[in-house]
Image (tube, rainbow, N blue to C red; front, side, top):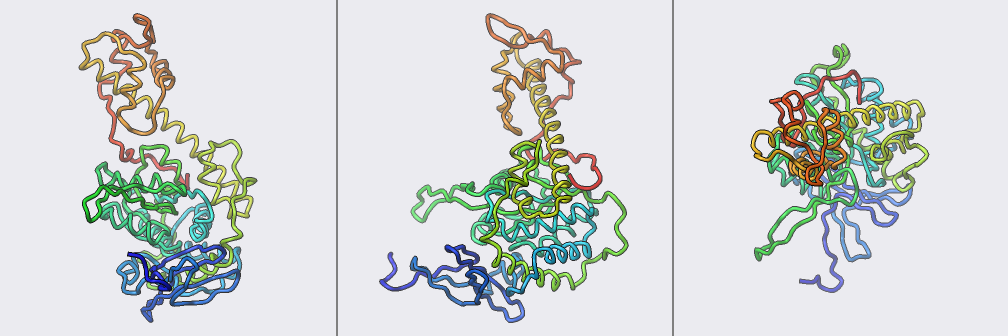
Length: 438
């Protein structure tokens, strides 16, 4: 049914970019009220409604919304002058240093990531932050401290029901804070992996199967683009997903004596004050922020540069940009090594199965490659990749009736260990940690 003439269509709103106007939801917990901040240029006002030329009347989400009143999504209460980018970053670093024990370089990276989270939608790609370590190394503490000051931080865990995560990211946007992200494969965690895989690039929604009231097939597209901060013990086996993370290895040294064992109540007030200043930073800087191709890192894979470009655009300090460049180069080496290991494991697993259960004496290279890729673990590999694995294992490639492949007689126990297997597509086992971040 169409709206009556001259009657505005009511649209509950969390955030909106309308031409040169920014609209943001704020929540005053003490007064239990929500409002919209409307910013044009350097000026802003607080409104209860905003009429657009489209016929929409924007109104704030109700303060009784469970996500808001239970602090599942953390909002600012009002804009407060941020005092300049340099001072804002210094105060974020001081806040993080007060409550979390991070390596000095990553403390600075994390502060810039907080800033990035408040303007992420000015870019086409964003990286993710990860805290990795065993139990008791401070991962959850880091999530709580960092997640309390990022843009619309939304707290969830891998044990959460997936549907509200999709809906919250789609309606609220902002930053997903995901604890216990060591995902054991299932339909539920496969959906969470889709959020992580699709959420780093703008314009890649996740499609989910839904039915309308008439039982018609009616898939819905959920927008999941935005910053994400996760805590986990190990690594994801998918190296494409691994490339999206800037990782801090936790528990590499004794806890600093000045870090409180329990988070004090003061953190909430400190975080709210920073959120209010960061809201002002967003309102007054959003339209001036752009990617800077001159800050890309030479000598690394384009994908890693793509992921790091938005963060680098906000880093003015050349020393910190060099630190990030060193980190990305190290990540490229790690990914290349893991990819090679994954190729080998998958190829040897298929060859072992061929020896055990196939009566034929020869397997074609094309068939071998197809069977390796049927595992759907990591990225698809080519016959050339399979050939490299065979040569590295000194397995001769020969022709039989004009077909290139491997004779069973060449598949010795030495070349194919008896315990060859392929793990599931969820996570890799915990790796030995290295100091600092990677």
